[in-house]
Length: 339
Image 1 (spheres, rainbow, N blue to C red):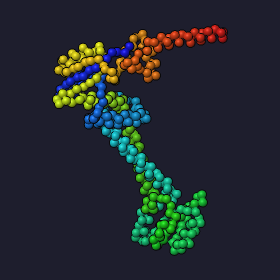
Image 2 (cartoon, rainbow, N blue to C red; image 1 turned 90 degrees about the vertical axis):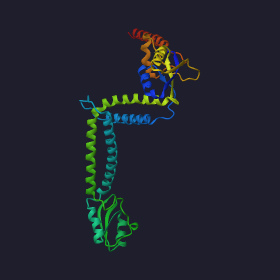
Image 3 (cartoon, rainbow, N blue to C red; image 1 turned 30 degrees about the vertical axis):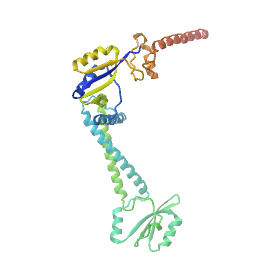
Image 4 (spheres, rainbow, N blue to C red; image 1 turned 90 degrees about the horizontal axis):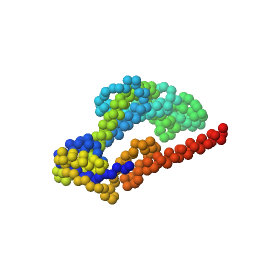
């Protein structure tokens, strides 16, 4: 059956905001209504922290759970560490991808000392250009710059990779320059940087594996944050009228006396009335014990009646009982015919 509801408006002193919300939370009978028009900083911070926490929990899901995962932690400190590790991991992964790309571009040229090339250009006036083209273009470069040395380094798929060495500075637009990070960059140094980045990523991964033991505690902390978010949202729903705060919502009709007693005890103003047309009344369904067997079906289908609708759970149970009996009967007749 659908439980009848009552519409409630509570009036409390602004100075008793948190105390009143705590008392209501302990009663657990009032469904708050209204929207958070202007979320406070507290609500926004809690919401952001909760989103980040869920992201960390999902990330730890992908890691092997240590055997000893019953650990007590400072959840906020762990979240802070996970945030720093996540940011650093993203940064290092970008660096690793960039370095790997540069290594792939430079590997075909073999190992060379970029510092030495830079030194030769600066101190000796010797310019070195790395080029890539078909052999015909390479021959054209030789003819165009007879005073320069053109050395073939490798050839693959009809593409020649060669170096042009000249005592004079050559206009780069006239050369088929290869797409490389630059001759000033040493493949040895890039490979060393790449290995350093990969080592740090391995350390971060190892630390995340250790923190996977904290996942159950972080899940519990997420529930704590959810309660704080609900509390902050409730505080933001309170309409302010000077020193008076108003909070609206709905309660089951059977709990009216409980709320009135709490209001009298805590000095709240309370107004209780029947819901009006157009009110978005929450639905509380109490299914008789004998009909609860059908509840998993409604949960699976995601079906629940509205406040002004009819609860059909008992009717559905009777229908399925008859329908199942018919199916079982048909199966029995079928087996007899087969035999």
